Image (cartoon, rainbow, N blue to C red; front, top):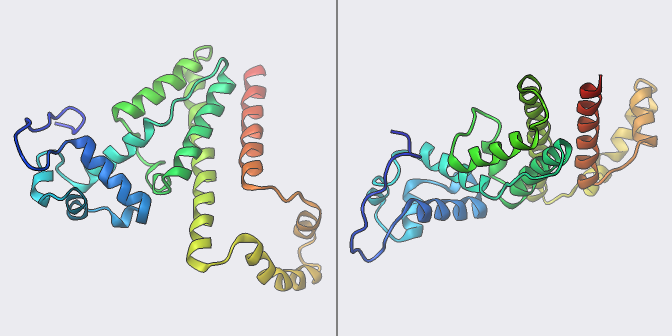
Length: 226
């Protein structure tokens, strides 16, 4: 029986009561603090001040725990909107905000479909918001938006982690590599890149995300109108 349908052990008088919700929240707290590498059944048990074996009445494996954590974060993502475009934008921004709040979330999304109750609720809201489209259109449209958001969010989180691990932010990175890049461009071997680097806009992460999302939604709209 999947963890979503498996009943929890009955309540009993113990010094430290447990529930799946408490276990998942403790795991999320650990992951928020130190990443997914900090999450193990032993560490979660220590966080709750219980023996590790007590957790097995609620979850069977670490993989189940990760699924529950992922689904718990999806409870924070509630897509809404009056139009399909507003709904998809709400979904994209909700996923991005969740990943900024819980960086480890970006490591777990993008694989096999997540089927927890909160994830299904989020998906239901998106499909309902696209009710004017045919099913043949909804499937690739949702896939395209999810692919864009997951890629964009992972890039942002990777940069955050790089800044922490190196102690160097993007401006410092650019300053360090600037002389080398200028020498390479001066060879004349990269004229297109040279034009892009010298004349292109320098967008903030927010501008980059929202501009790319606008291009994607514009493309969907053009396809729907064709």
